[in-house]
Length: 338
Image (tube, rainbow, N blue to C red; front, side, top):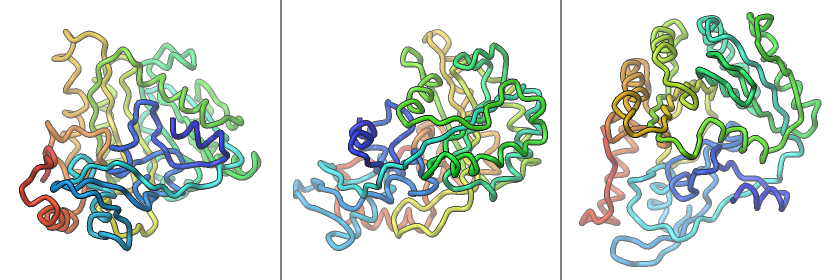
């Protein structure tokens, strides 16, 4: 809803990728969204908040007013210790162009695909978001076989700029074996939002987990092979996201990110299949935990797999700020904190 209203007004904010993402949790926990490689996580673009504290006081916090609470709000996620009644956001002009490329490869080329994807992580234009999705079928592309899809939006000033920013994808060493190959096509954000939701069907049950990593492809491939070999049917999928080295961030609770984000999304319709599919995401991320620098608060499973989502230093600081604003612990903390 926010993305649509801003789009109509010629404005932009790095909103969440999926239509079901609710803005409150998204903004508090970090918020990886559209064009976030340029504008940063959503929380970095929160310039103020109206909140109600544990003792019932209504306050406004920003960099100059209650800066410690403002620091905590940007990254504390579900463990934030105040009730937010309003967010104040930094907005941007709507990008003139949203272009895209689309490639699909046989899943048998996984080793070559992910080795190459890891090798180019530092070269990807920050306007490009390389989403590499492996699934057992790709219905929206008419692919009824296991495949690895590169679906990559680019936000730019002109079509020519967008097309140039996506040219790196033509260097894939197995591009001649692609099932589908669309080097460039103009599109728009509403169309992208609709396309993304084809992997998150409303009538399904879901379990997800993720990890940040800077490990080599050689280290990650055994786990990726295990993920692919055990993947439930569509819309279940495995996401590889080339995030790249991040620029210096503002001083805020959110401070854990890495070169690559890996995530598993298990989706199934029938509750009777819970035992069969519900642990697929968690167990596969757990098996690769030795290569993880942490997780991002979003599509994680802290209730069943505790993991680090901020550095130890920031967690200690969060505890100090919490003690000042909520000494009696009226607000619930985090599941699975380590």
